Amino acid sequence: MVHLSDTWTGRPDLRAAFLGGYGRPLSPAEELRLACASTFDAVSGIAYGSSHTDPEVTEPALRTLHHLRTNRPP
Image 1: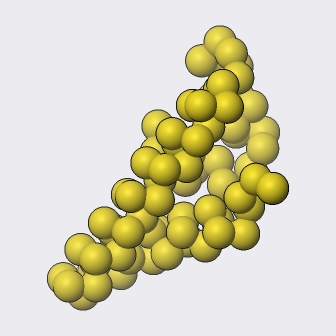
Image 2 (image 1 turned 120 degrees about the vertical axis):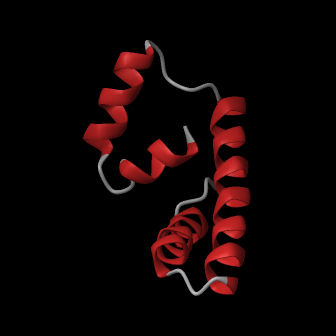
């Protein structure tokens, strides 16, 4: 789900469509788990992409990390 969530960043319609197909909204614990897993995946992507000079890995990871930092719950 971590990689899918990057697809719906900035597209609430895609998130709603995914969750509609999933059959229910994510619970608060699942939302937190998704945010944590997304953070770990982004940091891993930044480390790998930077060490291998791979912008196709680094750029989405930086975008995800930026999104997580600017859209975290209160």
